[in-house]
Image (cartoon, rainbow, N blue to C red):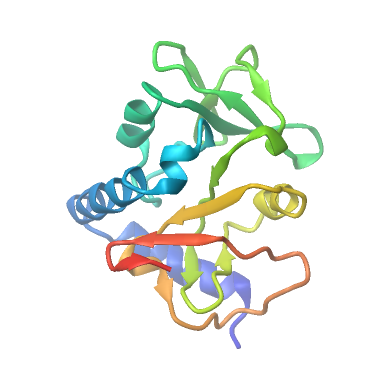
Length: 184
């Protein structure tokens, strides 16, 4: 079993080397699959993430979704806890630690009030739906008490069948993984 740190290093390199057009093509297929789902249809308040270059592109999906849904993006609050703030297409964003996020003046929502959280990560197991994130534990803390539905948008290059990293007591599996190969 490899360490989480080593797997993160390998996966970051792998994602950094991906062709951007390939990422965009996969993102379009995966986000369309989510848009056509009952989960998305029934959700009015959705937490997404403003993607970095390593992640599945989400910017266009967020802009489109915000026309019919309330979209919230994560910001890092005190004690390294996530705060979800409302995304409005015409409102400025700030960049903190290289990540775009809504301004502190944006409307906040308690995670329990969200209908759906779209959770980022570096790699995902299609067997047990555990994810390996970037190492901050931000989402694990939120998901531990979250009563709603969770999904992840997963590039083919992020899929593993069985996790080769240690699963710990605080790791929380995702309800549904959306991929170009289907939903797990």
